[in-house]
Image (cartoon, rainbow, N blue to C red):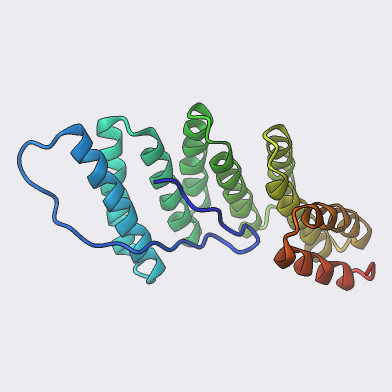
Length: 210
């Protein structure tokens, strides 16, 4: 039930193919409940990808309840993250952050470093959407520290690009924007990530440094 890596410059995209089943009645083993929790989660992702958000939320909430019942930690965190995405889309940023912070605590406890990184980035996005640029920078700095500690060079590069974009678009500081773009470009070049190299080069062109 692990989430696939997502492009963090775009906001919260999910897609999963699934088949819908009816929950069996009667006595169900823990293993059976776990499989059903996973299926509900996939169903929710599928519905969300089709724009059926309310139906997706219903699946995520059922999966969350079942995951809590059987102590399925990863399932709890994944559903919390998806529900946070929903609440952020409804501009209920406080609720979204509360769910994300709970998910982050679980991911940390379970040693799921990439998921911690993605959820922390989601927190930053809530602040940015809310227009709290100072808090966004604060969250990005925490995220940078985390990615450096865990050796997540791709995550670090994306965060540096995002920070550069904030300096460029919200602060109007082209110098600080270019400094972060340059470092991000170096990291993306090391990773041979052609897609992001092109994106950062466009940023450097905008600030007159390329």
